[in-house]
Image (cartoon, rainbow, N blue to C red):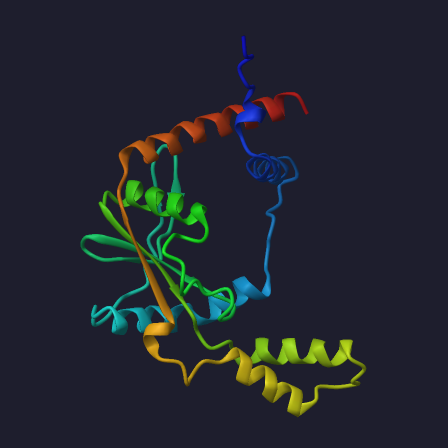
Length: 212
Protein backbone atom coordinates (compact mmCIF):
# COMPACT_ATOMS: atom_id res chain seq x y z
CA UNK A 1 0.00 0.00 0.00
CA UNK A 2 1.40 3.40 -0.99
CA UNK A 3 1.60 5.94 1.80
CA UNK A 4 -0.20 9.22 1.07
CA UNK A 5 2.13 12.14 0.47
CA UNK A 6 2.33 14.84 3.11
CA UNK A 7 1.71 18.49 2.25
CA UNK A 8 5.37 19.30 1.71
CA UNK A 9 5.61 16.46 -0.81
CA UNK A 10 2.56 17.74 -2.70
CA UNK A 11 3.94 21.27 -2.94
CA UNK A 12 6.97 21.86 -5.13
CA UNK A 13 10.30 22.99 -3.71
CA UNK A 14 9.86 26.32 -5.47
CA UNK A 15 6.44 26.80 -3.86
CA UNK A 16 7.76 25.86 -0.43
CA UNK A 17 10.65 28.31 -0.79
CA UNK A 18 8.20 31.08 -1.70
CA UNK A 19 5.92 30.26 1.23
CA UNK A 20 8.85 30.35 3.63
CA UNK A 21 9.79 33.75 2.23
CA UNK A 22 6.25 35.01 2.91
CA UNK A 23 6.45 33.73 6.48
CA UNK A 24 9.75 35.55 7.01
CA UNK A 25 8.13 38.77 5.80
CA UNK A 26 5.49 38.37 8.52
CA UNK A 27 7.87 37.29 11.28
CA UNK A 28 10.45 40.02 10.62
CA UNK A 29 7.96 42.70 9.50
CA UNK A 30 9.80 43.44 6.28
CA UNK A 31 9.14 43.09 2.56
CA UNK A 32 11.35 41.04 0.27
CA UNK A 33 12.26 42.98 -2.84
CA UNK A 34 13.62 41.52 -6.04
CA UNK A 35 14.97 43.25 -9.10
CA UNK A 36 16.96 42.16 -12.12
CA UNK A 37 17.84 43.52 -15.51
CA UNK A 38 14.97 41.46 -16.92
CA UNK A 39 12.31 42.96 -14.64
CA UNK A 40 13.88 46.42 -15.02
CA UNK A 41 13.51 46.26 -18.79
CA UNK A 42 9.93 45.05 -18.48
CA UNK A 43 9.00 47.93 -16.17
CA UNK A 44 10.60 50.56 -18.40
CA UNK A 45 9.11 49.41 -21.71
CA UNK A 46 5.69 48.37 -20.40
CA UNK A 47 3.73 51.40 -21.63
CA UNK A 48 5.33 51.30 -25.08
CA UNK A 49 4.64 47.57 -25.29
CA UNK A 50 0.97 48.12 -24.54
CA UNK A 51 0.78 50.71 -27.34
CA UNK A 52 2.61 48.33 -29.68
CA UNK A 53 0.18 45.49 -28.91
CA UNK A 54 -2.81 47.80 -29.41
CA UNK A 55 -1.54 48.78 -32.84
CA UNK A 56 -0.57 45.28 -33.97
CA UNK A 57 -3.80 43.62 -32.84
CA UNK A 58 -6.10 46.38 -34.02
CA UNK A 59 -7.39 47.50 -30.63
CA UNK A 60 -6.85 51.15 -31.47
CA UNK A 61 -5.97 51.99 -27.90
CA UNK A 62 -5.31 49.98 -24.77
CA UNK A 63 -5.10 51.46 -21.28
CA UNK A 64 -2.94 49.91 -18.59
CA UNK A 65 -5.09 48.49 -15.83
CA UNK A 66 -4.41 49.89 -12.36
CA UNK A 67 -7.24 48.11 -10.54
CA UNK A 68 -6.30 45.56 -7.89
CA UNK A 69 -8.50 42.46 -7.85
CA UNK A 70 -8.98 39.93 -5.08
CA UNK A 71 -11.24 37.09 -4.00
CA UNK A 72 -11.04 34.53 -1.20
CA UNK A 73 -8.08 32.82 -2.85
CA UNK A 74 -6.26 35.13 -5.24
CA UNK A 75 -5.10 38.69 -5.74
CA UNK A 76 -3.69 40.38 -8.80
CA UNK A 77 -3.48 43.34 -11.14
CA UNK A 78 -3.74 42.26 -14.79
CA UNK A 79 -1.84 44.42 -17.28
CA UNK A 80 -4.82 45.20 -19.52
CA UNK A 81 -8.53 44.42 -19.38
CA UNK A 82 -10.87 44.84 -22.34
CA UNK A 83 -14.62 44.27 -22.30
CA UNK A 84 -14.17 40.53 -22.83
CA UNK A 85 -10.46 39.69 -22.49
CA UNK A 86 -7.75 39.93 -19.89
CA UNK A 87 -4.31 40.60 -21.36
CA UNK A 88 -0.91 40.05 -19.79
CA UNK A 89 2.32 41.17 -21.43
CA UNK A 90 5.78 39.65 -21.09
CA UNK A 91 8.73 41.61 -22.41
CA UNK A 92 11.52 39.31 -23.54
CA UNK A 93 15.06 40.30 -22.63
CA UNK A 94 16.40 39.65 -26.14
CA UNK A 95 15.61 37.89 -29.39
CA UNK A 96 17.03 34.62 -28.08
CA UNK A 97 14.57 34.48 -25.19
CA UNK A 98 11.67 35.62 -27.38
CA UNK A 99 9.49 32.54 -28.21
CA UNK A 100 8.96 33.25 -31.89
CA UNK A 101 8.86 29.55 -32.86
CA UNK A 102 7.10 28.14 -29.80
CA UNK A 103 3.48 27.07 -30.25
CA UNK A 104 3.22 26.25 -26.55
CA UNK A 105 3.51 28.75 -23.71
CA UNK A 106 7.20 28.69 -22.71
CA UNK A 107 6.48 29.10 -19.01
CA UNK A 108 3.45 27.13 -17.81
CA UNK A 109 3.21 29.35 -14.72
CA UNK A 110 1.88 32.11 -16.97
CA UNK A 111 -0.99 29.88 -18.07
CA UNK A 112 -2.06 29.52 -14.44
CA UNK A 113 -1.54 33.23 -13.86
CA UNK A 114 -4.00 34.02 -16.66
CA UNK A 115 -6.50 31.48 -15.31
CA UNK A 116 -6.27 33.30 -12.00
CA UNK A 117 -6.84 36.65 -13.67
CA UNK A 118 -9.92 35.29 -15.42
CA UNK A 119 -11.20 34.01 -12.10
CA UNK A 120 -10.67 37.43 -10.54
CA UNK A 121 -12.24 39.43 -13.37
CA UNK A 122 -15.01 37.03 -14.34
CA UNK A 123 -13.83 37.02 -17.97
CA UNK A 124 -13.65 33.90 -20.11
CA UNK A 125 -10.86 34.79 -22.52
CA UNK A 126 -7.25 35.80 -22.02
CA UNK A 127 -4.22 36.62 -24.11
CA UNK A 128 -0.64 36.06 -23.02
CA UNK A 129 1.47 38.27 -25.25
CA UNK A 130 5.25 38.27 -25.56
CA UNK A 131 6.81 41.42 -26.96
CA UNK A 132 10.36 42.00 -28.18
CA UNK A 133 11.14 45.64 -27.46
CA UNK A 134 14.30 47.68 -27.89
CA UNK A 135 16.40 47.53 -24.75
CA UNK A 136 16.47 50.89 -22.94
CA UNK A 137 19.68 52.88 -23.35
CA UNK A 138 20.66 52.71 -19.68
CA UNK A 139 20.54 48.91 -19.74
CA UNK A 140 22.56 48.75 -22.95
CA UNK A 141 25.16 50.95 -21.30
CA UNK A 142 25.29 48.67 -18.26
CA UNK A 143 25.75 45.56 -20.38
CA UNK A 144 28.45 47.17 -22.51
CA UNK A 145 30.20 48.66 -19.47
CA UNK A 146 30.45 45.35 -17.63
CA UNK A 147 31.68 43.67 -20.78
CA UNK A 148 34.41 46.29 -20.99
CA UNK A 149 35.33 45.92 -17.31
CA UNK A 150 35.50 42.14 -17.62
CA UNK A 151 37.78 42.43 -20.63
CA UNK A 152 40.40 44.82 -19.30
CA UNK A 153 38.98 48.20 -20.31
CA UNK A 154 39.13 51.04 -17.78
CA UNK A 155 35.98 52.66 -19.11
CA UNK A 156 33.16 52.16 -21.57
CA UNK A 157 34.46 51.78 -25.10
CA UNK A 158 32.11 53.39 -27.62
CA UNK A 159 32.75 50.82 -30.33
CA UNK A 160 31.74 48.07 -27.92
CA UNK A 161 28.73 50.11 -26.86
CA UNK A 162 27.63 50.38 -30.50
CA UNK A 163 27.96 46.60 -30.87
CA UNK A 164 25.68 46.08 -27.86
CA UNK A 165 23.26 48.72 -29.11
CA UNK A 166 22.99 46.96 -32.47
CA UNK A 167 22.52 43.62 -30.75
CA UNK A 168 19.89 44.82 -28.24
CA UNK A 169 17.65 46.95 -30.47
CA UNK A 170 15.34 45.76 -33.23
CA UNK A 171 14.32 48.73 -35.37
CA UNK A 172 15.06 46.81 -38.57
CA UNK A 173 12.96 43.79 -37.54
CA UNK A 174 9.39 43.47 -38.94
CA UNK A 175 6.69 44.16 -36.35
CA UNK A 176 5.12 40.72 -36.72
CA UNK A 177 8.42 39.15 -35.64
CA UNK A 178 8.29 41.09 -32.36
CA UNK A 179 4.94 39.88 -31.03
CA UNK A 180 3.77 36.40 -30.04
CA UNK A 181 0.20 35.85 -28.88
CA UNK A 182 -1.15 32.88 -26.91
CA UNK A 183 -4.94 32.70 -26.62
CA UNK A 184 -6.15 31.09 -23.41
CA UNK A 185 -9.69 29.95 -22.64
CA UNK A 186 -11.06 29.92 -19.11
CA UNK A 187 -10.93 26.46 -17.52
CA UNK A 188 -13.00 26.00 -14.38
CA UNK A 189 -11.26 22.73 -13.49
CA UNK A 190 -7.89 24.46 -13.54
CA UNK A 191 -9.22 27.36 -11.47
CA UNK A 192 -10.56 24.92 -8.88
CA UNK A 193 -7.18 23.20 -8.82
CA UNK A 194 -5.57 26.57 -8.13
CA UNK A 195 -7.98 27.15 -5.25
CA UNK A 196 -7.17 23.73 -3.81
CA UNK A 197 -3.46 24.49 -4.09
CA UNK A 198 -4.02 27.76 -2.22
CA UNK A 199 -5.66 25.81 0.61
CA UNK A 200 -2.62 23.52 0.76
CA UNK A 201 -0.35 26.55 0.89
CA UNK A 202 -2.35 28.09 3.71
CA UNK A 203 -2.14 24.88 5.68
CA UNK A 204 1.61 24.65 5.09
CA UNK A 205 2.10 28.25 6.26
CA UNK A 206 -0.03 27.62 9.36
CA UNK A 207 2.05 24.59 10.32
CA UNK A 208 5.31 26.35 9.46
CA UNK A 209 4.60 29.26 11.80
CA UNK A 210 3.23 26.99 14.49
CA UNK A 211 6.34 24.80 14.52
CA UNK A 212 9.01 27.47 14.02
